Length: 184
Image (cartoon, rainbow, N blue to C red):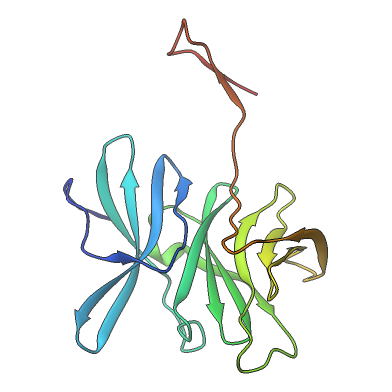
């Protein structure tokens, strides 16, 4: 992980992808123009504790992975996960050791049979406690997919325009004792 001063790295967040809070920091998939013909994608990180920006490299991608170059992030247990849209599906990568580029591992390719040239691949939203991934399919239908069996079930929820999901931790901050938060 490359440490940068309090100035943000030069880059632009892709589309309307949301940021992900993980490991005490906000993370965005970002693109930077290196030349007229070359772009580089990376993860921009804002550490909220130190108020310092970092960059994390994305995994080394194959030509298939780089087809659409649309990625989003999510927490996956104690790891950072990357959803990468490809021509006929979605690749899911996990960074096993935070900040270590060589620890990126492709854990799943969610293939979508029968998708035509103009059809969009599913969009990864988040992970459930069970380890299943929540995906948004073509007509904004939300499904839950088991990564091992790749069996999916319709959640009976239809997105509306811009859909997002995230995790949370229940906690109670005592107003008269602000340094004593209770988590359960």
